[in-house]
Image (cartoon, rainbow, N blue to C red; front, side):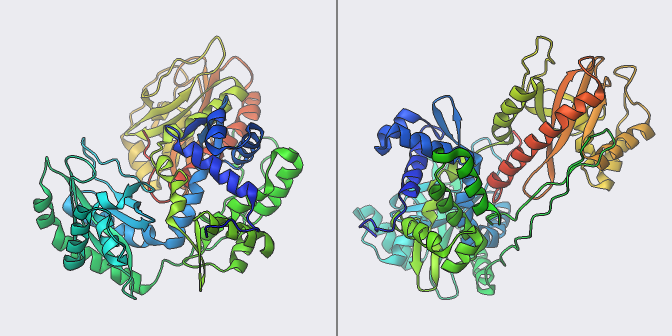
Length: 548
């Protein structure tokens, strides 16, 4: 569409304009005034939109700056889940990368450009910076020539036209340092059972290792085998949609204790809009009044609902998944079609790769410390004690994120510090989360040393302490690492439920009783861990989040 439809939802249009302006800022950060100037919107309008997007977890604020937040990854995830290509073809790309010891990418056409969907990297000092969601000019990359050869669009310049003709004749495209000096790649198209090109798979290399001709000689035969396997997978059908279970919530304990079992958490299947989301929007509207744009929130709910449907989605299904009336969902879809994020086909509505331009490439570069630190800042402001996130590194824990408290007497630990897992609350949480066989093997080789008179040094006592930590769902260490130091920790799971880190608050043991510490800190820790986990689930939906 070129003419703005009369049914278009203005707040949704303006909200996405603000989001695009923030994404265009350096590192996904933009001042409110800059956003107002770029979008042409009034400052008051930008403020209302920012308030709504912040409540929804799409943006966050630092002073007068707006920053892209991990919750925005759900928008790009909706496209990746809906098309199903990363889940269906990604394992084949990863196997090819392992076989060739070179990075392998999946890409799709997006207007005049090429949008990357997935990247199977290789660990090297000289690494490629492509990320899911990145957009490259079609004429500057190998997949672009393949897509142009398929759709018959006129090429811009003669050099690109020649590459398109060659790609049409050979069925192969080569990038010989077109996008960047030293970078070479070779790509093949992947076709669906009807013969249409659905994506391109490419192998990249660097001229320090081999030139374009050598890369093609190395990769072409394995590439063809991989494409055949991918096309066979497409012929078998898309990955079945994940079922969306009803949320299960276990009532929390009224009075936490050192032996308490952790309270349950409400979780929803990735890609699906929680069934109460529409009602939540109404509640937020009542709470925030004019500061919350419900129609913007509803439009984003419709967009995210695509993630629960493979391929074209019917209006009725999208409305049901978003928890909205059909008429409301229809207006949002008309708006999204007008903006180029959705296309209406005979079989239903299709989400387009342009959605990945709403910050997905920026968010896919986030690490665990990037994600956790804003939540640690919030936690420390609330409890006024130091808070940290650590991962298991051998028989030690390694601090990957930390925010110091505001007390005059505080714990002096920096990111990168390693401490023995057996004597720390986070270590016991992480040890307790290991599979039983691995936990037993790990504890069997640890020889505890008495760091203070209260350190558990007996093998049996340590095993019991770790088992108790796993059972109750939080770790507690009282003056075992250092005299006068108390620590409470909880697990931080990723989107699959696997515990990838631990979160703790450390304080002076003489400040209050253990029961008082637990009553105050444990709910805050669990809430913060839940927020970090939700962000990890969103950002890590299609690629693992690095721990550092």
